[in-house]
Image 1 (spheres, one colour):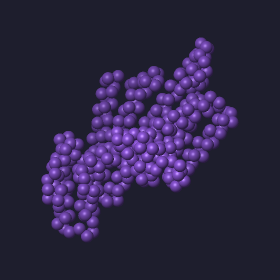
Image 2 (cartoon, helix red, strand yellow):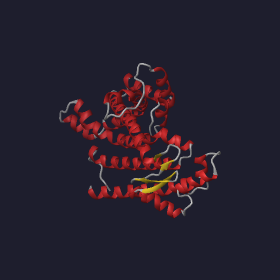
Image 3 (tube, one colour):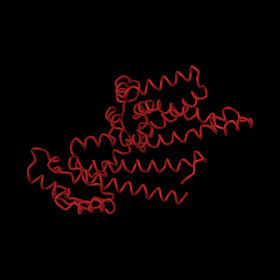
Image 4 (cartoon, one colour):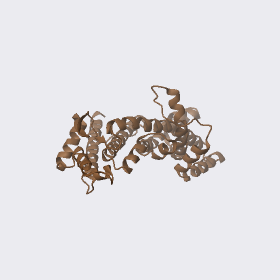
Length: 325
């Protein structure tokens, strides 16, 4: 297990490094004028030259990349308005449109997105898994058919339409806002409740179908027949033995969904006015803020890689039949 974990960590690091090289080439080596785009049409040549020097765009590509990687590990000095500013590790650069280090901006935005996605994940996992298991136990009945019909109907409606309807008409829900859970946990939960319910219930439809399909297959397995023959209660057979095995494929989907939502919660953040990673990245894209875009890409790569690693390791806990190669 230890050897497998070390191999997976080495593979994860290689993926992150490859993402770093590719994204750097796309953003900083592309045949564009980042300094001119950041500065705008009315910018003076002197200001463009200053931004070019600050971004190290006047230096060889190899030196630019070396400086960027060094900044991630040990920090680096950045020139801002003629003043040299020390950027501590991990240094992801400086946003000239917002006037702050990229690390600071990400540190403010990531907790917002993380709060939205994790809270919604609790909703759709609990609702989806329980509803799917309930429907599978009553396969072919009116309850089962109604559950499938409702999930298909919900899944057919675009998510942003659902979010807009909730934002406009669910006036009974608290006003959306972000507060630090360390300062006021109640205000934190209250301000995110609308986003949690919207994102959670929208995804619960898919997880209901995933859980139902997995449970239908598991309920016909020999090990559950053996458990029944030994006198185990139906509830124990389903929820103690069957549900644990059925969660294995659901875990795969959940790990990928959680990572993708962390890097793509832009609709939820925009509609409910929450200053998360998606809103920050979209603003950076519109303003051609390359350091912020680069930082967002790296955060997304790390999240995806870490979630894949955790899902692989969790397999052995949920299903002992899984053997690591």
